[in-house]
Amino acid sequence: MLEVMRLNIKQFVKQHRDEWKQLEQLISSLHKRKKLRSASDINEFHSLYQKCAQHLSYSQTYFPDEEITPYLNGLVSKAHNLLYKDQVSSFQQIRYFFSTKFIGLLLEQWKFVVIAMILFTLGGVGSFFSVVQDPLHMFSILPADIAQGVDPDYLGSSDGAVDSSLMSATIMTNNIQVAILAFASGITFGLLTVYILIYNGIIIGALAGLFWHSGKTYDFWAYIVPHGMIELTAIFIAGGAGLLMGYKLLVPGSYTRGYQLKYQAKRSVQLLLGTIPLFIIAGIIEGFITPATISLEAKYAVAFITVIGLVLYVVTGKLFLNKKEATANSDS
Image (cartoon, rainbow, N blue to C red; front, top):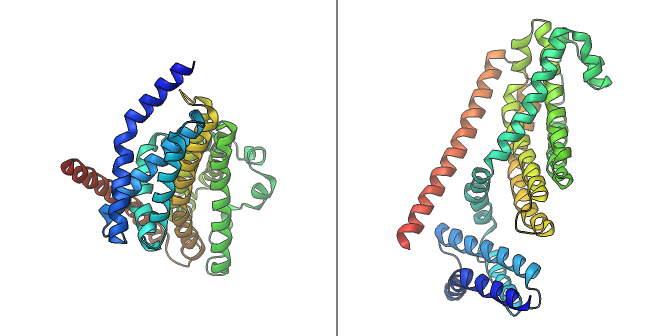
């Protein structure tokens, strides 16, 4: 057993030694410069730091008593101090996260985001057709306070009469709570995340069915899609993060569930953090534009603009990542 362990350590060191030496050289170089000069410096340094941090986590799990573990711990500590001290400004860190890190994680885990959207849609379609068939089903589908408080005839009657700032803050808080719950539920092997996504879809589908039955579908969606396109995208991302964590706990592969929880939870938290600006934007739209006394067409126009903005953000981020990879390949 001891020989097998030694062989695994040798393989581990041989496989990653070059990356460790690259990080050591970059640390030495950056100490001489006193700061990171460009975005490419930050990207390269951060990429090596992240890889070595993962190697340290693995080594602490499987080789806790070997010399390689304190070596990696020291290397990662030096890199962390250099990366997050004065050498890198807060603005640079934020710009790097939203322009590169978040988009990269999103593109890597897009399948789980799509699964989250499908679960939400299944719940919505099912409840929609149930209420269309019989509006009384709404009372068995929706919570009592929602079912009793919805009246299609009063849609838009309070436009311009609400405290928009208070409404916006309340909406943002509620939506972020839903996202955090969907993410954190991944610890239940994703089962509670699945329930949350389907349940939220059921609520939207039932309301859509009620307004369709009343002949106010066009009006209903005009009040949903301006903020809904961004809001639902953020919820799908947060739900996808929870599903990712749940899947890795259910199917840990060659790693232990404890290691997968530690590693995947960190990635999932980063995905969740990336949705916060989306929720802020959605809350502002829902608090100030949705109840505004403007035409329904204007509200649909806002929804169209938000979709274009989301697409441009992802496409631009993807192009930036491709350019970065091409530059790295040419340098090597």
